[in-house]
Length: 346
Image (cartoon, rainbow, N blue to C red; front, top):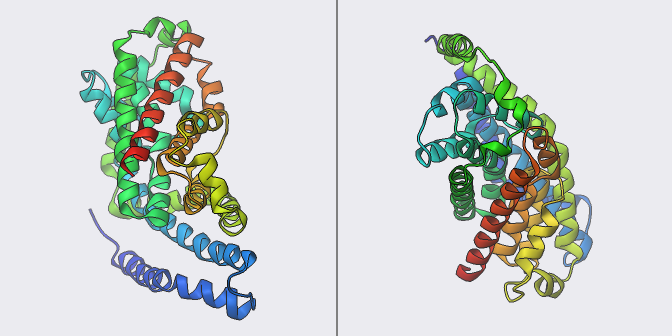
């Protein structure tokens, strides 16, 4: 494969500029808040403004770099190649592979139905398919980057491990329940010529040069960051308001670890809501800063991301009510267990 040295040199130069700016964001946010806008230190509005000015560029800069890298990685894992990897795999091993592939495979609620049909009709077991459907929206690069940028690597790693565990175990349970009869009848009537398509897709993938893959990384940045930045800004704005104005004792009383009912309530509130990681995680950071328990807040976040109402409505086209109810119940129980576990440990 030929590598464009000018392109590589430009990437390294941009990374150096990125690093210099990123390391000085804290000083810049303080300078803008108190010197440029002449805010008085210790006031609610100053705290909220400094939080907003610091977090918006930090999160967006992290997103750009990681989405670029993951975009290159994704060039090796198309939907067809993912189906080929998962087809015929034994349960549990297949669940693990599906959950891991969900992290690096493009997926959103709007693609839930075609992905589901494509997986099931090419021999991917039902439980393995569900492991992928849970992992892809919940444990994606946007969520992990935001968690790392706002909370550090330990929380990001814990979230990734628990999120993957929920995806693997829930898919395994659904597989063991043998609920194939609760998939819409028309799904199994599809006659898809998958072998030819898969072979052609694989051949095209193998012909991609590193320059092509770098360009795909750039396109991923334009596409993903271009779509999620308004959610990032809105989420951080809400978080800034909570950070600056909501009393700490108020959040402790509602979402503190001593309130046993806080975890199931957080899940019940989160399930019907619709947001993505970019919109919800900055709010989570602000809630934690005001004394909310880590397990309760993570349970809320997971339920919003993994069990979004639009995805459930879309999946209703291919799943019968009993299977949807089972899916929601298993994921909800898994999320609540994670919430209580985190509250107990931390």
